Length: 182
Length: 218
Ligand SMILES: [Zn+2]
Image (spheres, rainbow over the protein chains, first blue to last red):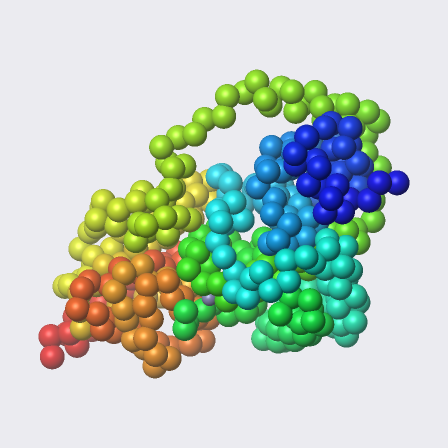
């Protein structure tokens, strides 16, 4: 299987071959659809929204900059926006996302050559190292699309506890990433 | 940037669960704040890693072929770039808000709220009846108290105000939940323009406004 690494993405950005996109599609589409179904979309709607998301990815691929983050995090933001717009119906206009406007982050360019794999693997490892309670609030937020209030109800804990677990989880994840992104 | 949103607000922004009015103020803030932008980048990496870890579900048969058909069809649709989508980075209005209020704060339709204070409510989502409340306040005036449920974000667009936590300047955000009491006062010579997002409807209590007016006269 071809690996979706930096070189592969660069090549796809330059050539935009449908054959190459199929590899991206085969990796991400089943996951994007899966998240939609988990969040209450029926399978037909989920397939539709997933298709729309993949069209956005095709259309916007030139905007992806590997120096700003991993390919998966970029896909995640596009999938998230489509999910919000089409599934939650929280907004009648696209969720404003500054990812399409070039805004610099602090501490940039310190280590441009972070391979997609290594960054994503590091984040995964960091999340897996979290205590179960902290991991749970992050999961409910990122995978189950729950607000802090909803998480508090779901876990039957005060909102202050939700917030403090979120902060701790984030801090630990950040500490674990220090060696590659600080 | 000194005054940033709470980290948990940043995390909720990244995971996409903030209501639209809150999300707009956060994205306005990070246009000017590299610190929060970096935090959001890290949160997006968490999202990306969760996405990769998600178990696959079956796609419809011929899903990719159907996708290609839809892709072709979408290419034939002309993408309309309206004037509203042309942004001005040098404007005092953050890019994130320009789609809703244009590029010029003075073009807002201000109405009287209290002496020295004007307000303007801008609908950002018809369906959800979500709006942002803009306030324009003269120097040395207090920002009027208002009632709301849940949390509230205030973003400064122009001028500055002080509260017990310090000074808030253009780009700064005050991130308050309903438990906090604060009495901001405008400290800039020029008018302070800020925008408020709340969970529930924002109601300026006329009783409170009256008290505020009498205090302002002292
Ligand atoms: Zn900030």
